[in-house]
Image (tube, rainbow, N blue to C red; front, side):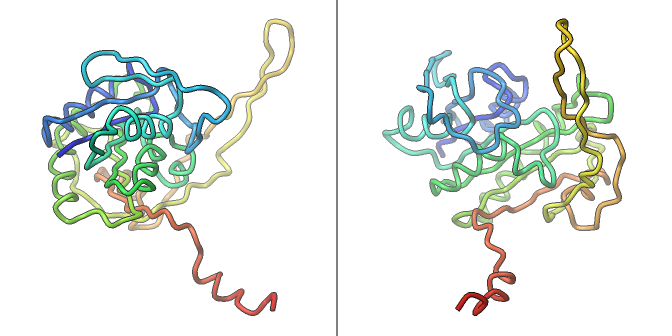
Length: 253
């Protein structure tokens, strides 16, 4: 099996090394193509107005001056053009990608681009306890992900689908199982803008998230993580609301 891995935290991110070790428990044929710099929150953007710069770090390790989507395209159409990868893994992200995060996340976008190109793809994210951003327990994902990935591959990844995997911020032995979940929804009223002033008294702004913890519905990715479980959310490329589409039939005829 040939595996391409990428991320959105950048070529030097700790989670990328974790993901490579995960991938090497599945195959010896692993190629790393990751952004030169941190690309968190860039979603599924493409570098259309700037050239892509490719730098070889070492054997089978490449940095791209671009987004995670750019990296997947570079990996498939340039670096691995002789034979496409059989699997794309994106991550391991520093922090969860839950609920509406899937629209903002470069990690999820890397996997989504793989799905668009017809390659089985998965996004992996490792959470951390509140206030413990610098104390991430990466061994949770590193220990538990390989078996989960192998099981998902044996089941099969349907075309135009991808898997979003999130690991709780705990030691591997403390994870309370695996849940196949739906995409949750946060209370977005906790999002705000904080206005500050620079040294020349000119205003600038930071996007802030409140720390209010919601009580999400059962069966969602948020609920699984809040209860210490690993969340596996199958996502699809087609965003069509088929029920609403049917209800609109005849409205404009």
